[in-house]
Length: 93
Image (cartoon, rainbow, N blue to C red):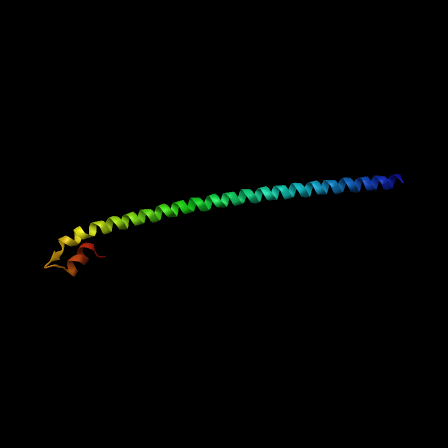
């Protein structure tokens, strides 16, 4: 009878250790998932801010170019018309 009780005690202790190990693993995986998700969100937000500032910079550059266009084209006007070759030489590519 004694060896049977020892065997049952060993099995119960082993089962409790496996349960504790499984619980710890699940908790660790949950925390790792939360940390990875938070890091991914921060990365996406950082990239979004960079893209937003880049687009804003380009819009400001285009706005500045368009704001100066009437003055540039005003210098090229002859007889109420803009000469195409002068406009291409001045502003074209």
